[in-house]
Length: 312
Image (tube, rainbow, N blue to C red; front, top):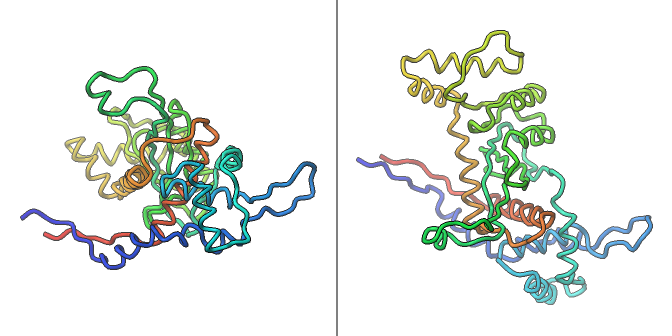
């Protein structure tokens, strides 16, 4: 008989889905408490609104799919009922301040994480839709950005997110993730794009283990550096089987490699909730938009996730 996937905590998960539309989740007491910027003793006019206030506006924009002008009107209506004494930033202030947010690599989860899964996907900036491309082909004006995600497979929360140009390879970003990653991380999972010497070296210096399937044409090499020892062991483990494909499947099962698919699940959730396009045009503001989407997805994850199992 064909197995079926059943959600076992449907009542709790259904309540979390309802909570996603609760505005007090996104315009929380903590956001109102830290709404105004702290006074800094430096030259120039200080900011009126804190970075958290601007990020709250960007999160509301992402969750409810609003334009910047609509965000200003939405916040004004909220402050009338929830906090009449709070000033509301204009859409131009939100747009200007967004250029300075999301530029640095920041840890987005506060939980203790032992494993991470890493992958990347594309987000469209502008260009024709899929229907036009299917009928008439793609033109040269389709522009994409590359979103790199590091996800905790246990809590499904995003640990790091970084937006780059589409020409940046995955292995270039991996070392930046590990440089900011906590020392509690012991294993990191990635696809074949991370099967490079620089990635193994970054994992060795961090003190964690990189679980990546070697390329199909990989060859065992003697007298390799110490950080490439795990790769040689993986090649030997795969080649011990009479069939290379069977050995590769067995290696993935023994090393728990299939946890890496949870990174693709996180990217699918992000695209389903917030869309496949970036609404901002400047690269610096696109990074702030991605940071707002990542923090929003983490809040939704903490509200509740489905817990299912396969039934035969």
